[in-house]
Image (tube, rainbow, N blue to C red):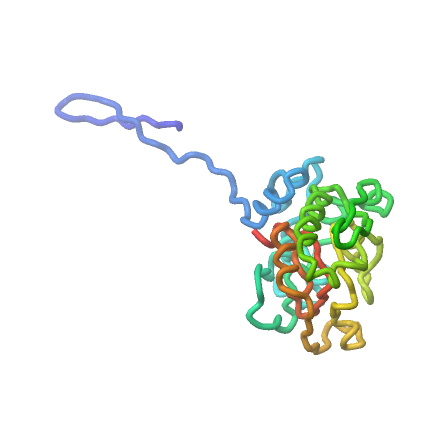
Length: 261
């Protein structure tokens, strides 16, 4: 630590005493950015000048400065900071989600496109095949290797494979990778990135199917048939569940560990 010198006079004697000066401190890194750095260490490496810094030297805007965005704007034009605006709670829900409470559904597309691939071909180049629940199901699925997600899916598969009572929910996996938009929108589905799974639709509910509409302002009545143990196992490995959204999608699990820490 640098010091300055203060001169004292006492009983006719001169002596110098060190006076500490304040150290130079770095600007505060938002706690949410620290979570991104911890969860995606091969991608997010720092923060400066209102941008997250990426390993390839690219920069992505953190906060666009727009306050109090309407819900539809949060869906269509979120900055990266907006993704943390609604808190995702692990474990069993005490009550159904309140109106427009969709933690994790607000996504900055630039962030995910940069991490998983800007094009279908780029994403496909990082896919690998795994066997889902080898003992109970044995279905081949394609998932991304980015962020070790293939290993996460394998760990989830191995745990669920020990629960034969859950087989009806685990057979006929509805989808992992599919380069497409979310139904009724111009927004990329996270299936486009190979980090999402839809389980058997025979036992799941989706708000658009139930209300027979695609209007985000529609009033919907929450429905769910997925056992909590399945949700718990996915969450344990960094996946959020669409059943915790007001616009519920109970088949849907996506890798979002930054929202679980």
